[in-house]
Length: 344
Image 1 (spheres, one colour):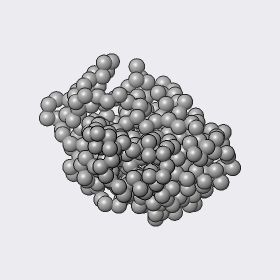
Image 2 (tube, rainbow, N blue to C red; image 1 turned 90 degrees about the vertical axis):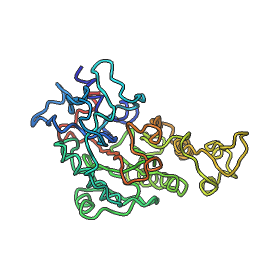
Image 3 (cartoon, rainbow, N blue to C red; image 1 turned 90 degrees about the horizontal axis):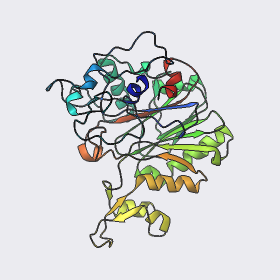
């Protein structure tokens, strides 16, 4: 009962999808209920970290409309508008979303991270209650640069001046790596047999230019682990049925000369002939590149941020600055989240 309530609060990988020492949380568009306060002392062995709020069991009509952030299980089955969970009566309709039109979403990614932290604080659930340390935001630019965090000093510097990068790697426990997305693909990479972790923000530009290759190269160098020991989790991104692209994206991946890459694109013409538009599969493109690097343990990638408007922000759908955060860290047993996987 307790664990099921906990599962209704997060997107997080299944236990077999990443090593047991790695923790990952992905926010959606729903914030924790402001009426449910975090207990000061919480036993992770006895009760859920983030219990389902009273409002989560169905709030009165007009009890608040808009967008908020929360966590859901991984992989969640899409819920029709207003559908209730069978066991707990948990409703994820927009009637259960508190107002967020007062939240200012600035244009730069690291500032969006600060806005997300502020949003959590405003609803009475400071983000640090969910994490062992404050997240390390990046100045994301759809590039391929990777920042290495190798000690607490560099983490402290990063919090003061977020680096311009779209990926980060670390071997330091309890350092929370973070990327923000709204259709782009968040990717978590971990060493199965050593404490090394990476996170990457991979849109089509970053994938085509080599952000995954750079990230894996840095992670292998930092950990001295072979690529075959790496495990990868693909977070929520736009699905292939919704991601229509043009010639620029198709040629950026060199699909005209690479049959495997071309198979990740479906022509949109009714007769199946190329008319200059394709549906691109970001998940398939990422899996292909990871397999070519020698990585076979790849999981996740079952969502569509565009089509699941109830759960996710989508830039292509909304054309605004709202984002989800994917947060990953190596568990060092610090704070109340150390037993998170036992609760799922």
